[in-house]
Length: 93
Image (cartoon, rainbow, N blue to C red; front, side, top):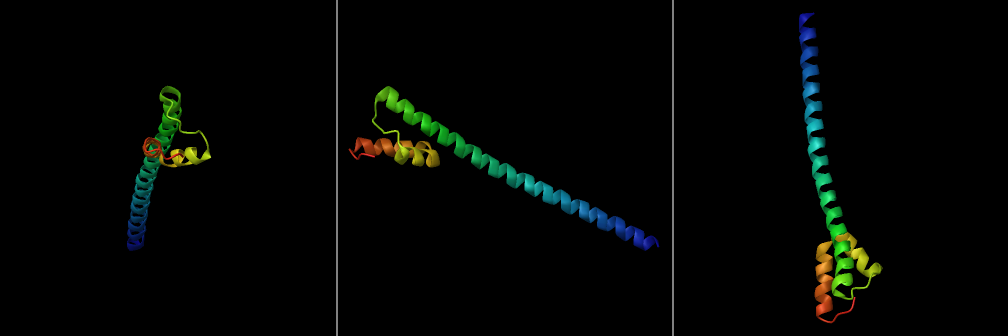
């Protein structure tokens, strides 16, 4: 009888350890994903603000339309930089 009781305790300890490891991994992966999503959202918001500010302050001439807002929302500041370079080379967007 004592052997069966000890084996139940060991199996419960193994189960608790597996659950702890699973929760730890889920937390780490979730934190990583949230960090990436937060970075993308901040970059997109900064890109949209940059387009409005550049058009208002420097009159760059980047049109506020779907063809410019979509890449800016997806890629953020790098898309704004690319659009400015295209405008400097005389390529209309």
